Every structure is written in structure tokens, then in C-alpha cells.
Length: 236
Image 1 (tube, rainbow, N blue to C red):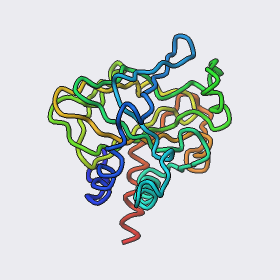
Image 2: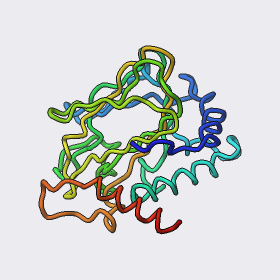
Image 3: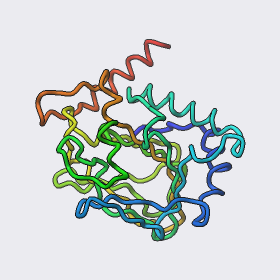
Image 4: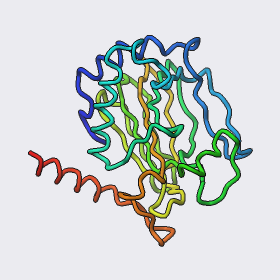
């Protein structure tokens, strides 16, 4: 959890320019991956969703400058490389109304395991699996709306905090799924939840996050954070 990751200006611009577009008529429905039949199904009643890169810059003044600034800060904090060429290169904004939630799921598609996938996900064989996820909280939630981690022995709930960023890794250093990252979204019990999510693909990260021969070696997030902090101090 990175506190005060977004500036008040960025929060204000995202709320001003993106929130009005998050209606069920204008947005894409939330899609949850189903492991049972290598397909996906829409949960359109649970969240109004839109990919920001689908919106032309001239339709949203300041959008490019704001999102470019956030992208640079993400790369400085995490060393994760952002590529616009792949499907997960976009920011996705979502608003959850009263009762809005997401079932427990994995952000890993098990690419390295050779798992069969629906056609829409087969491009992941070129880009690699989803190595990490970052969720940016645009608003506080008065009650509920937490991001919960449900894997046995790693259970936890992180509640939305306006301006903060939640980062987690979905893969081990080898590219195989790290099952500690099973997660979902708790129901919103009061108010609404407004978040922007960013995903990162494995193969674009090879210089910083080199593939380990040990299949079970996990990515050391604390080491990454310490290195990032040292760089920031050295720059100042």
C-alpha cells in the first residue's frame, strides 16, 4: 500500500472527467475470468467500467498529461514497465455502487502452465501473463468496498483510501502463478467505490524482473520498495 500516491489535482481531474462517463449505457461491463471453462462472463450489474484509452484526448482535456504523470510515478515506485501495445496496457476505471462487488478470482491466466485459454486471452502467449496489478483508489468508501485477499494463510482486507495505490504481484519470479494473490472486492455497504486499475505483463519486465530457474522463487516486494526509496533519496 502506497499512501498519498495520487496528487489532489490528479484525483480532481479523474473525478471531473472520467466519473460522469461511468454509466451503464456508456461503459464496458466488468469481466471476470472463469477458470472452469476457459471463458469469461460479464458481471454488468456490479460495476460500470471504461478503459481510459478508449476515450479520445480531445474529449477529456488534461487526460493524457494526468495519466502520463501517473504512469511515470508507477514506474518509479515499482520498476514495472508500462507498454501501451498490449491489451492490459490500459488504465481501467470502475465505479461500484451500493452492493457492488467482485467475486474471488486470480489475475494470473497461467500462461507458463500452458493452460488452454479463450481466444480473447491468447495474445497473452506473446505478452506474458499478468505479473502485477496496481489499484488506484480515487475515493474513500464510508463502509465496505475493501479489496480482500482470500488465499489460505494470507487472508487480508485492504480498505480504499483516497489517493492511495495498492500493488501486488500475481506471479513468482519464474512466471508461474503465485497463488497468494487470490482476491476479490467486498460489497460496498455505503456510498460508492471509484478505482482505477492497471495491469502489467510479464515479458515486458524481463530486464528488471528476470525469470528465475527456481519455479517456486517468489518476487521480493520489500527489496523493490527499498531500492525505489533509495533512488528517490539519492535524486533529492
